[in-house]
Structure formats: C-alpha cells, structure tokens
Amino acid sequence: MTIAWIFLVIVIIGGVLFLRIRSRIHQRNLLDVAARREKHAPKTAEVPTHFTSAGSKIQEYKITQQETQAEHNRTASSVESEESPILESPSRQVDELTTKERESYDARDQARDENIIALRLLVGDLFEPSKGVSGEIPTDLKQEQSSVELRNTWIQHYEEPLNQHAAFIEQEEIGSGIRMMEANEIENDDIQYRIEREGGKTGEVQISLAWDDFNDLDLHLFCPSGERIYFNNKKSACGGELDVDMNVRPTSEKAVENIVWPDSAPLGQYKVGVHFYKHHSRDDTTTVCKFRARITTYGKVRDYSGSITHGQAMQMVTSFTLNR
Image 1 (cartoon, rainbow, N blue to C red):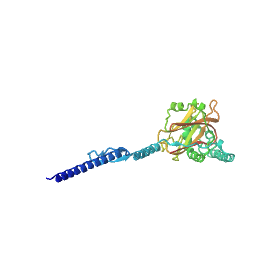
Image 2 (image 1 turned 60 degrees about the horizontal axis):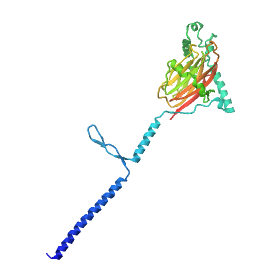
Image 3 (image 1 turned 90 degrees about the vertical axis):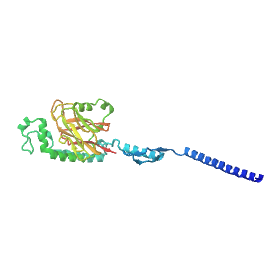
Image 4 (image 1 turned 180 degrees about the vertical axis):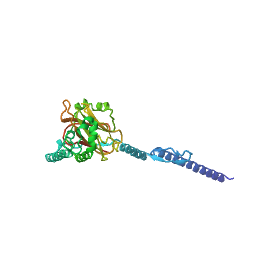
C-alpha cells in the first residue's frame, strides 16, 4: 500500500470520528437546553391516580396552578354561600316618619283600634257579665274556671275574629314606636335568665318578649311562610316554636315569652306583634305595660323597648328580614 492510500484511510477514519464527536456534542447541547427549559417551566400539581376497589384505573390527570386557584375560589364561594343568613335592617318606626306619613299611620292605627273593638276582642269586657252577648261566658262557669281555661274557652269563641284582626295588623309596615336600647340598659337586662328559668330554648333565630308586671302580654310572630306563631299555634310547620307563655294567670312580675328556631329558620320577612291580652288588677299593675323585645339571629342580638296600652289593637312593633 502506498503512502497516498494510507493517508486517505487516515483522513476518512478521522472524518468519521469527527462527525461522531460533533453529533454527540450537538445532542448533549440539545439535552442541556431541554433540561434548562424544563427547570424554568411552570410547575404542575400532580393528582394521584384514582382506582376502583378492584384496582382498575379511573383517571389520571394534571392540574395547573391556575386550575388549582380556580378550584380554590369555587370552594371558597361555596363555603361563603353556606354562611349564616344576613339580617337586614328592621322596619321604620313611627318616630322616623314625615308629618304626612305620620298622619297616614295615625289613621291606620285608629282603624286598628276600632277593629279590635268591633270584633269584641277586649278580654276585660268579654269576661264581665253582659246582656246576652254572643260568646258570653256564664258567671257560674267563670267562678269554676282557671285563667287558662277561660282563655281556652275564649279562643274557641274568638279564634276567627282574632285571626282577622291579626291579618289586619300584618299589613302594617311601620313599627309602633319601639326604640333600640342603649348598651348600659342591656348590661343589666335579665331576659336570658328569665328564659332559662322557665326552661326556654335558644336557637339560630329567637324572639323574646319581657315585661315587669302581672299583666298578660302575648307575643305573635308572623313568619315568612304565612304562618303566625302565638299561644294557640305554638309550633309552626316552618320549625318555629313558642316554648314559654306566661301570665295567663298573674303569677310573675318578671314575665317572659319566647319563640325560637333551634335551627334552619326560613329566609324572608318576619313581623313581631304584641297583643295586650289581659289586664290583671294586682298590686300596682296598670293598664299601660312597658316591654322589652330581643331579636337574636345567628348570634347577633338586638334589644328594643316599647309600651302598649290595654284596649289598643295588637301592635306590629317591628319586622326583620333574613336574606342571603
């Protein structure tokens, strides 16, 4: 073999080795670039593969950071929607009305007072001897019946008129003049003690009425469902319950009544009514009765004070609305 051929073989072998080395260098560079790209790429959150109890695969997927945040936002929104309902502002009171509005209210109030008289719903009159008035309770029975029995007898005769009167009151949108109590007044208030003393319940929504004489006031609550909770309908289909009803007999100067939803109170508007059922002539008890009302909704408490006179129509003292 001549020198020329030897040189040619060396050149060919050298060229092949050069091309292989260059190819490997190029491939390594590509791998380095890919590695750097992967290093700085957005991270992904791996979700474990789900399997059935038999071991077969259900799904395998990846969620980007953006999708994870979107899912978090949806969850937060769902939790927020399950929070307690919002208590909207209570109804306006007569003291907040303009002169023209007050004139209109006073006319409606007079009509309500005339309505309760026309329906013969003044208990003090009904239990007095009279001359052949329909529904009159005979004197001999009066002497034998307790106050509770008297009221049961009375409601048998006058349930329909009382319902008519209550429906008239329910139309009112203005409160009869209660005021929100000051913090120093609430500090010494014993409404909760009275409720516990009588075995009353507490709950998500609770309306309580307290007064400090022997008179018999009745708490009436108009529910969003259209029902009315009061002494003759103590448990409503919508879950509310009148669990404390006092002074049918004049037994306490520290009286209280209580309506409560232990849970799941319906959304909508509630109207709080107070009826001066019976004036008990005892000690210094007068025909004007001051009362306090407490409205508790999901831990938030509002305390009010007002008064009612025997012979007045049932009073729509305030309203409140539960909303999402």
